[in-house]
Image: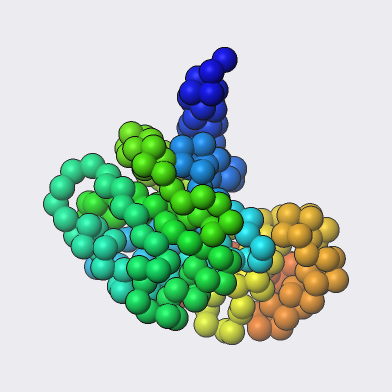
Length: 266
């Protein structure tokens, strides 16, 4: 088998796994796998913005040197830097049909705070973005660190070829998944309570709501058991709950709308 044939086979396999994961908790990792097969992407984040509404992070995936970087950087971007990303916001407002792929290097970003929060902290060097304009705007970002070779022309061409399929999968997934039982959505809902939760504390709380044990959380997040317990205790104190039962009650109140939770603001 030639290198080209092997690459095409890997792409076909990754896309098949992505489609098969629609509506499941494995979709974010499968999406990253598809982006990696197409363009060598190491990290990814996907956002949605309905006209006139705040930006919503659908998911962030990847394993950089700091394990909470994808989620933290993505939430920072949604809250603080989305409006400054004129390349994306201009495309998002366009009336053209179909997705557009654009590139941004860390060195292109004039705002040092944006560059530090979303790029420099994990050594991210550049980004490829798929922007799908419409009443509900979808943006998928794929990132490379400085440890890897820059995106090649072939990487961009492959991403352009499959951009419509990738974004169709995202669109179908977001409608298939129950948002209040999606970890990323839960993290944002908990942080929307404005009780001082850190991102890591919200992640641990969301995982507890979804039924993970502290040991399982420790393995998945590459944290020690003691560190997970510390984050959980801090989160419980800020949320005003004493145990998992209270935490689940809080979640039910969020789902019912009894407790309003603001989404990530722009």
